[in-house]
Figure 1 (cartoon, rainbow, N blue to C red):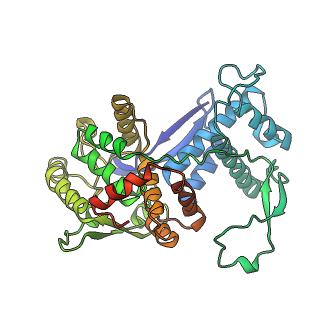
Figure 2 (figure 1 turned 60 degrees about the vertical axis):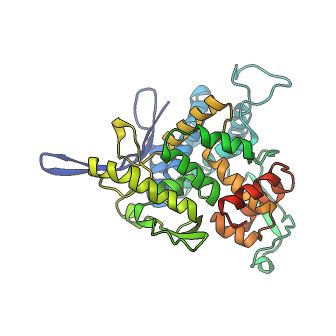
Figure 3 (figure 1 turned 135 degrees about the horizontal axis):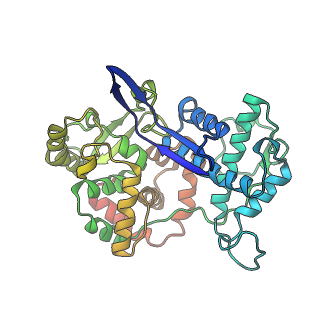
Length: 388
C-alpha cells in the first residue's frame, strides 16, 4: 500500500485551456491502483466536511495502516466484523520487531492515544460507507450505555440530558494527555538557535499568543495592521478563508472559524519588520500571487507559502542541534499552561485559545497545578508584554 499526499492547489495551462489541480490524499494498492473506497471517503472529508488538510492526511495514514492489516491477513474491508476490529487493535499494540510473535512485558510501539486516533478514523470510515453504500458497520454495536461522569463545569444544556452517554468498547485507556510544557531555559535555547528571522518570529508568535500552527501559516499580510504604539496588546483579525473554500482548497483554514488574536505590541512590531525586511523583497522578486505572511526562503520554493512539513523539519533540525526535541504545538501548550497557572479565568482562556468547548481548556488547568517549571514562565511572559 502506498499513500500519496498532494497539498498543492494550482492552475496550469494546456493548449490555452486552464486546468485546476486540487489537493488530495490518495491510497494506492501494490499494483498502483487507487483504493476507491478510501479515496471517496478522504475526498468527502476534505471537500464536503472541509476538514483541515493535515487532518485528512493523518486519516490517510491511519487508513494505510488499516489496509496493511487487511492485506496481511487477507481480509476485505466490506466483510469486517466486531472480532476483526478487536484483532486489529491488538495488532496495533504489538511491538514492531515481529508482529507474529507473542511478547511479554514489552511496551506497545504505539501509545494508547495513537491507537485510539487510528480506531476513531476507521470508525468514521465505516460510518461514512454505511450511510452512503449500506456497508455493514462493525462498530454499530460496539458501544455501551453508561452514566455521564460529573464535571465541575456543566454545559448550558445539562438539564435537558438524561445523564447517560455511549462509551466505545474499543477505546484504550490513555494515561498521558500528551501535553508538553517547555521551560524558560529550553525556550531561550530554541529561539537563540534559529538562523532565520522568519523562524524566530513564527516560534515567538506560537509561544506568546497560543495560536495554532495551522492558523499561523494561514495568516495573511492584510491581517497585519499598523502598530498602535500606545497599546501593550494589539488585536489581530483572523479570517476563515472562505475564498479558499470557494476555490476548492482546504489547504489553509482556521480550525474554529473567525476569531481575534491578541498579540503583544513588540511582537506586532516584529511582524511589521519581517514584512518590510523579508516579505516585500521576495514578493517583488517572485511576483507572488498569494498574500500568506510566512513564506519559503529556500531558492527552489522561494515565495511559496511555508508548509507545515517545512516547519516540522526546522523543529527537528533545531532539536538535533540542541538536544531539545519539540513540536510547534508545544509552544501553544506552554502558553496555555502558563496562563492557567496564573489563574486566568477558564472562559477567557478558552477564547484566547480558540476552543469550541470548555472541556478542551480545562485540561491545562489540571496540568498547570502539576508543572513546577511554569512558575518561572509567568514573569518571562509578563516581561514580553503578554497580559497574564
